[in-house]
Picture 1 (tube, rainbow, N blue to C red):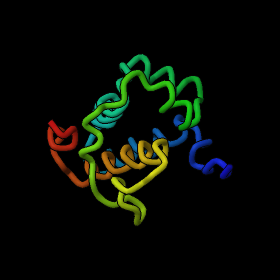
Picture 2 (tube, rainbow, N blue to C red; picture 1 turned 180 degrees about the vertical axis):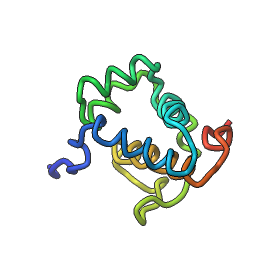
Picture 3 (cartoon, rainbow, N blue to C red; picture 1 turned 90 degrees about the vertical axis):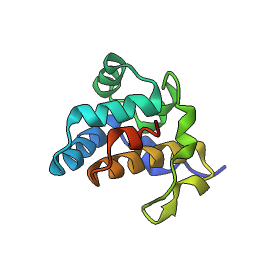
Picture 4 (tube, rainbow, N blue to C red; picture 1 turned 60 degrees about the vertical axis):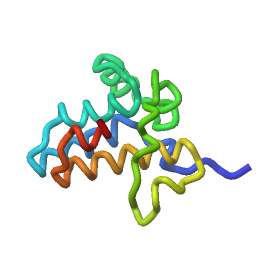
Length: 117
């Protein structure tokens, strides 16, 4: 059995503010970040806040997600030099999907396009 990737053990509450900072540096908002996370995971705003307060790691955050969006398979591109659509580990792929969506937000892409609507 392969050891778990260290990113899986990172607390979502520690990563979330980095996503918000990245967005705000590009004149986007925390609300934009929350909307993207809710779209991807199916969390309500309250559920998202609870995840942050509970200090869950990324593995638990995605395992407890109410409804991973089936549209996430449309997310394509490269994050950290890796094509997200080619990642085999489902958890790592979901983490990279989220990274990719936040990247698109920071690059000024319209929310409707980011959410593949």
